[in-house]
Length: 491
Image 1 (tube, rainbow, N blue to C red):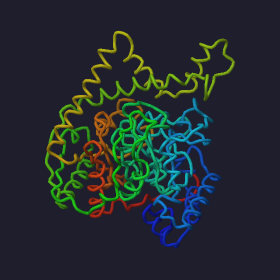
Image 2 (cartoon, rainbow, N blue to C red):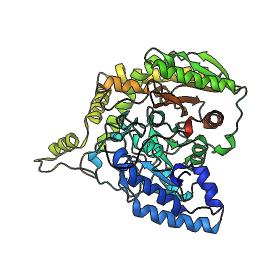
Image 3 (cartoon, helix red, strand yellow):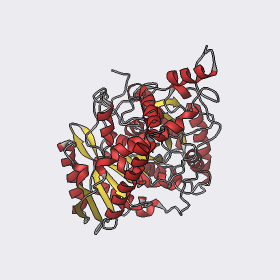
Image 4 (cartoon, rainbow, N blue to C red):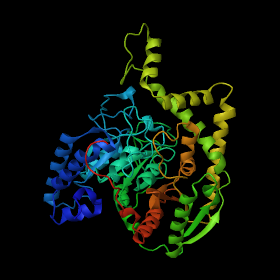
């Protein structure tokens, strides 16, 4: 019999409604699992043991009152450590913010609290969300529950690993160039990057403001729809939030994709991709076809320029956003400095890790006098071309399908060269540049490691992704596979 921490939101919500279990039972199983495996996985940078018990007590009152509680009421979850939590450390896995406790909640944090959700802690990440492996955390790396010698992906590696290891039932991450979808594929869970503007970014510590988006990491597509119901929608505190009605995403959970038109971009299946990964993804696309979808090859010709454009736009915005960390108002401050300028310099030198410094320098260079037009402005024009390619494709297709990543998870240290690491995001970056929704679904294994199928949708059409993903999971069992993670200390 499965322990409660191994179940999904919708399974647990049904058991809570029928009084078969209590919120305390679920939380106890989750904390027991954390105590068993966290020393190996290291998915958390901070734990919220006492706070989670208070939240559980409040949830149980609501459940006893029976006032149609939300499906997330009493369900334990994790938050990526760049989402503000009032009074709870929010460090972005960086020494420059060590010990920082925000005075307010992010909008998504508050919305989940309103449902009666239970926060178990803050999950590890690449420092300031800059990375694809969680090796760039300022504290320690998170390990992949499927193989502890492999990375969990990044930058939301902690949330994905916590869900895959059954330490939490679901988690929220952020996605700037693939940082939800890449960990989802590496850890064998579902990850959804919503359309830019669909979920409020208020209280998300910024990396690249025109690219960042918050989304769920869950065990299946049904749970993904339930979490989206809680976090999506307009927020007047976020100027980039779209003032559009939020649909009920559970209405898209239909086992029928007959006639759904699916474009298969040939550029996402280039020679840089692992042949075995491509074969698994093509088999998954054949599964969609067998369910009645119409799948055709198409082209997104500007894809080859997307990587270069992204690493100019993202680093330029990072250079601007991270200028605020100067040791004056909050966070880390260098000691014993002779003057304020030296204090600024040493604070940033000591507080930021190598990858963050690399990106700040790249972005500052791209924005500097004499280079702005040659690099940053040109990258913005390429971004327009990338979006135009998608717009044209979506005149014909309902969704686009591709691998989420060109390879499966790799061993720690295998991509020490920054360029080889950046190429990990080859299939995900174009989606962020165009501001589109993208979902990663488990669709098979290569060498014992999970492979993800990426579904890309039209703007604000997360519903069609949920519909297609749900149909796929109704006909497959990849999302039911569990990593062979044993309890105990680190090997």
